[in-house]
Image 1 (cartoon, one colour):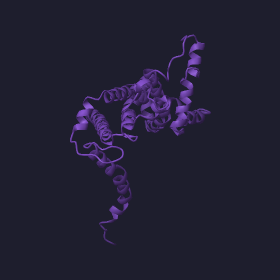
Image 2 (spheres, one colour):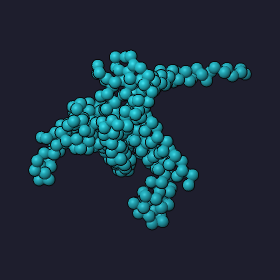
Image 3 (cartoon, rainbow, N blue to C red):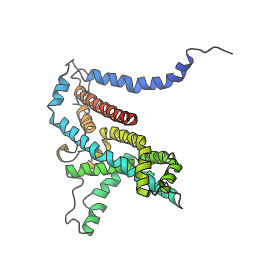
Image 4 (cartoon, helix red, strand yellow):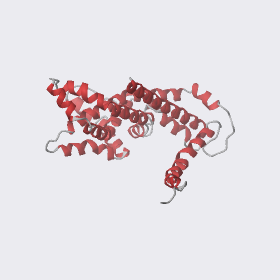
Length: 292
């Protein structure tokens, strides 16, 4: 019998640790340092203390981006938590051809964001399918400016996010539904509970940890939303950039020859703190419910 060698666990940990240090910890440390300077994209920079963070407090573009991102969270997260669950309940049934519908619902997940953006741009353009349908049904007389009005553009981006994530979260719910004991559902049915009561009083409580997981993942994804707004607006974020999100503003501030790397880094840290705070809040709420 040979003795344990102390370095063996480190050999297994080393590859993942190297990736984490190279691609996460070092860039994060560099961002934290840059946020305290007036560095530009071309380099240089001097230590300015907390000036970048004081500037954030009076930056209208930053607060507009934060408001749009918060709006994204409030509207998209509840939809992403509920709609994939309803779809999962439908496609978990063992009926002929259900595999086809599962593939259809999952197909947006594998589509690239550029392709998805082109599809939605075509759907929402003034002569696109959505406006043609609404005018054909006499719901509207003039095309809705989905791509040229900031509010409609943001709404279109939210719809695109929900559509793109529907299949991904559906798969998570399907795995969770497979673990719901059928004996509990059958016992509730014997006691006279209908389908709605069985779902509400048996399925939902058992799926609550999964729903919280989905909400957390969706909230983090919404906090980082960029591609939807960029592709639908053609890179302009709507008239005057009114539909800009936080990541969009960070990109605009930090890129280009006149980019302000220091100020963009301060924005990135603000986004990191907001996302971390959101994750901690959700985790604590979940722990409190489990202890209750």
